[in-house]
Image (cartoon, rainbow, N blue to C red; front, side, top):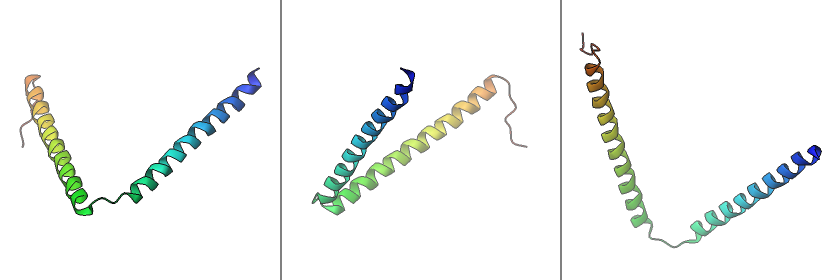
Length: 81
């Protein structure tokens, strides 16, 4: 019985990966055939990228302030020399 386990699992893996590759190729092909306005799409991508960068920087600054406050609360000396 145990000698069939790898065969069944490999067959299942091939089936799942094959199905995923089929749908990935189909999706990319369908994206290439769309007739969208490229300028509008470019603006939307730039706007979304700007929002992601802004949120990242805001979170990074918040983490820095929270770390500094927590460090001072537990008694660490965080002053510059």
